[in-house]
Image (cartoon, rainbow, N blue to C red; front, side):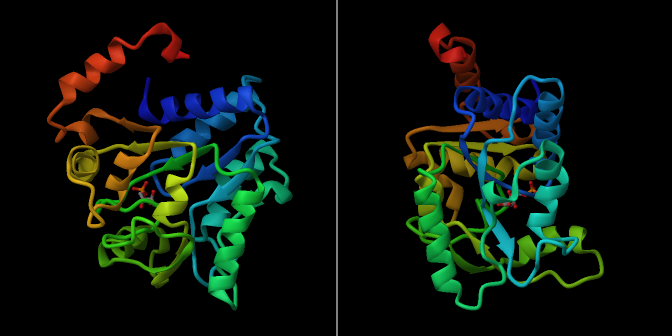
Length: 250
Ligand code: F6R
């Protein structure tokens, strides 16, 4: 099964068990295929996503939901509108707040009020960021404003075209992400191989924010062959997957 489809399958499995599941969601190139597959699954009647509650990881400061490059717009286009998700079940970090710390605190409170995040979908940056927790982010951080690293701005420029990429985002912190009951990180392509190897097999370090997931009790890392290329224990991971006991398979 393709990486993106496996992530969709894990999400659908949760939603079948818990229709009002609280999902933490990511944007970017990686989850596009996962969202497309979820939409297809709902159209085929394999899952009903209309009762989920969502919290997005991040948003650009100053961009409203109709800006063509906002993550809110991305989510509406690729998931929320196609599955018919009611607005009241959607939460996006407060990109337009005048009192940023208070609004970020309120975002954390609304996650808690929803019962916490059941499943957090994650991508990973080349520099090892999750959400927009750039290298040296506190491993205990909560939702707050962050300044993007130059490499992240460069990656985003493809989406913004000739328009300037905002330098600031509101992002869930690493502590917020680590509170999710299940983290599912998807990485594909050669350009992610280094970050994946450092995340899974390197030391836990604020220089590689995703490595904090080593301390998480239930994280699933889904990679394709290219993103897995620099993992030294590939044979072991394959044998773990191939030899799962039946009760762990579904
Ligand atoms: C986006 C996010 C980021 C991306 C990461 C990878 O909401 O949280 O951490 O997941 O920058 O982006 P892509 O998938 O575009 O390579």
